Figure 1 (tube, rainbow, N blue to C red):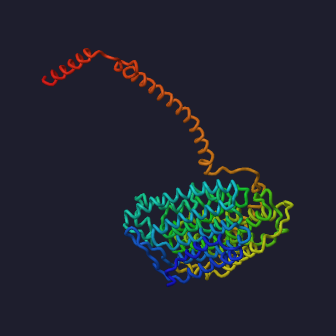
Figure 2 (spheres, one colour):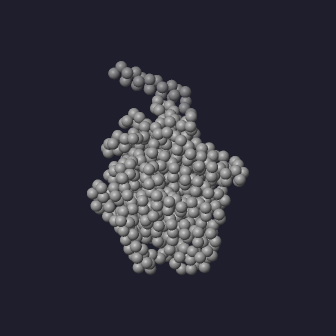
Figure 3 (cartoon, rainbow, N blue to C red):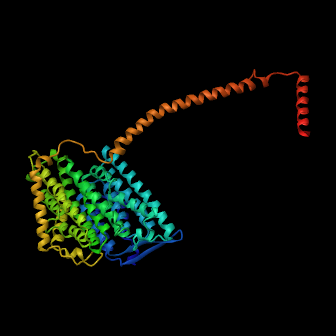
Length: 566
């Protein structure tokens, strides 16, 4: 009967219970719920395990396979580490929202039909918004409002695409046939569903919601946010659009978009937020390539990215929690008093840079190998250049400006024990997976015939990273940030849009007054005409003599009779 229990049920029900229990039991549940969910994920057999009828269709509420189990495993690990990191600092509302968010994301992974997927997709948007609002600041409130509007837009696009999908295929089943093959490229549903997925992936030009909203969450809230929304989008793209060529170029735009803005950024958490867009771009490119090698690379890279990105954000969150500062210009020299945070941040930086013996090295290179196998020389070259850019902004810039460079005079200690344990756990996973990649490769959806530790690959990656490091220090004067603001695409709706709205309201008010004046003038004229005939002194209101009235009536009757007979 275990297959009848949905994996997401434990986290969602537990999330609703967290605010209702004492702090001691809350601590127990925060650690126990992800572990119980992870156990359940590995107990459910492949195939459809739970169905329900709905409007003449059969909903596949729980449908398991290797891909869903891979993503669910890392989601549970992330919920465990994120819960540990937030254990003593986060409010009950944030913990509850975070676990509800994680459970909804797992619901998407095991959804075997479009309707179930859509329901959990929207629940995920609700949970993530509550995580942002849990920061309880004016900036978080505004950022969360813009965030939910953007994701509701994505949800509407997805819903319209699903309607077209059901109308054409007469089924709600999601997979295994790619959506673009079922519907063809001429159907609007193909593009609407893709657009809905890409909004959550942070694809350009609708990428600005991510660096706008995530850094406004609490230190623990951003750790949780980094894991689920974008990677769930990667999962559904893997399901629905493998081999869709346009995704190669969408992914490459995301890769360089994230690098450029991360290099321009001064806020350490916004640097890492742009880095999320950059890393998801690698995954979207791999999905577009569509071979088994590239899809394995995308899947493994999503797995490792969740871990090392969480580690980087934990180190940044620890700095923010202990110092109250988030700008690189206000930080520096923290390695003296925060050694554990510094070491963990460096391990995360090496992993995201694909340094040998770290998790990023054994995953990201599979996407590049997929490009080589398909003779996509331009794509391979751009991915190699992007790898150097990743090392510049996340591998060196973040740890250098936060923990080293100048001495800021700050002497905070390492964060509380629960935050240190969470960081050490994720740092261990970064190295463990990098040293023993076979354990991860066995979980991938396709058989793996790839050996990351070849002499050529190790030498090539080491040279690339060393030359990138040299370029960073040569160009260090240009890398130093000042208190400036980089214009983003969201300027069009945050500044230009609001300015146009105010201008429209101003001129619209004038136009409205002119229209009101004209209407009042016409009404006054009409009233004058009415009163001329029907008013107290009007023509039809006068007192007439009986004989005159009778004569008038007879005359009108005569005229009517003559007209009738003629």
